[in-house]
Amino acid sequence: MKNTVLAITGATSGIGRALALEGARRGARIAACGRNAAQLESLRLEVEALGQPCLCMTVDVSREDQCRHFIQAIESHYGQLNVLINNAGISMRALFHELNLDVLKQVMDVNFWGTAFCSRYAMPLLLKSQGSLVGISSVAGFQGLPGRTGYCASKFAMHGLLEAIRLENQNSGLHVLICCPGFTASNIRNTALNAQGKAQGESPRNEQKMMTAAQVAVFTLNAVQQRKPKLVLTTQGKLTYLLGKFLPAFVNKQVVKVFQRENHSA
Image (cartoon, rainbow, N blue to C red; front, side, top):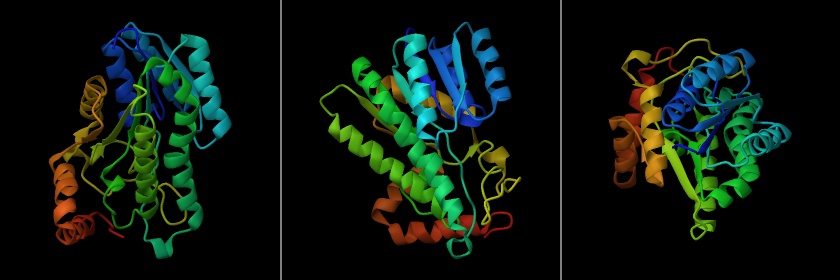
């Protein structure tokens, strides 16, 4: 990825941070944003220690103006953009009939609108470079998951947005990748919102048995370099995706069983 500019949203921890570091190892110049200034500064130092420049900005991707300023800063600083990875995201865990609807809106604002805002302002640069537009989605983008109505809605919406963009630009040279990591050890479950919109503060699953963020970053950037249209990771994720096409009733029953085994299952 030498001489490319790689931009990542939600880069303060988890998959986003791992993507920035893996991109730097591959020779990419990094542009990263997130909401935690201290963690961004730590990331900048790590990327620069790998020999690559790193532009960091504090950005709330649910704010259109901040997304626009982030992309403008990338153009001003680097003069180009080759890959945009929409990684910023939040989750939630509550039954829909108990859910404060503000939680649903907050999840949609970050996961869907954050992707839409950043992608829209990056499009001229990505079209010029015939680069890659990436969405870090989830199995929840093609399979409904109990207790995750807002999260599923946001990821289904992201899929529709990116697939439509791909079709609109099938002759432009733009590459669009939808990446579905499956369960990954990261901070997203600890910060997932409950029915009242407060962070849960703990993970309902065994994080030790999950794919690491660093592994996801390697697979994702490989898919970017190979210009794949879709990436589904983990055996569980692949089985859910494939069997869901042919045995949807069976998959739905298995999904419910899996989520009933969570700690403090909704």
